[in-house]
Image (cartoon, rainbow, N blue to C red):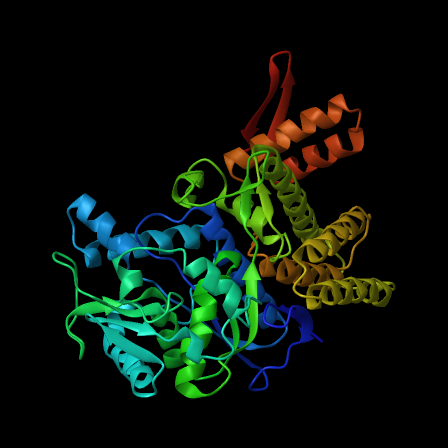
Length: 470
């Protein structure tokens, strides 16, 4: 039984899909005006890991994640670069796909774009106007927040508390509103900006309405799961609920899931473009193995913050390498394995126990930190089994299959192909350290692993050299 922490109710709930065996899942995607930073990457990785676990548990997941390609930030960035907003959006959509592919994030079932849904957005807004939930003011359309009686139910804020903050805002837009809490559904065109015709004059949609339209258009009026970063809980997701439920009269999403921030520095400051303390995935994967970066972020429980530093990334690289070595050790043993052994049933039972333990941990609100701990336990068990003088091909094949499946949930895929040069260098460095620590068993294990791959080591006064055998 899978349990999910529902932001709406502030408690863990048993996950019951709308349709047996199927999940309708919408995750807010990027606003495509720049490369994504690793905080954005964390959200993509977190929900990809969640999706993969649901699929591992037998669900068919219809995973929709949008591209916001109409936005104030896009317009400003396009003007600064001297290109059109669509050209800028196309450039960074492609960059997003390349960067997330490097992180082994599975492509969404669909990636709807705002520019492809303008007629749907206008129709959606018109329904809200007709129902009295929205009104026109100088070409802008605003949502009457107070008319939706449950406003604040996701962020658990009262309308009066929200009004205090909103009443402190100033400016021409605030003066156009009936109430300071009201928010824009449609913005009248400004000179030089991209715009579309509408019943209220030329303009473009507000940010919040876009996701309401694309989620209901592609997944239905009620969906199973709506996800996104913690910073989207209010006002974005709160406004999505207000818009969608006012239009349909139905629950918009049964479960709301929000991933934690990536923090940086001694003060654990949230990483964001507005604070200027971000590192883009595009630049980082030029220096760091994308699989290590993926592993670093996928193995923390999705709701918890991740502290980014060179130390935490280095720890992730070391753990990643240990898991890889366990896979390679067992892969090499397949060639000398026996067809079957008397203790196969006992070994397979132990494997089943470890897999069941993994499932129990992950079923508890997708607790990746506890889940990967079980995978470490499995890796240790595999290493011990791989050291036996006689092994069974049946158990090795089944163990490799289970091990690969569990790792794949975290987006980690190993193969028994030839080691790359940098991987050989890492293993040699580990062997040198093992010898310094007088851990000769580990030193010999690495030497044998490299030997099996045709790598010849030469220990000289100047250090360890290596070459590939003929």
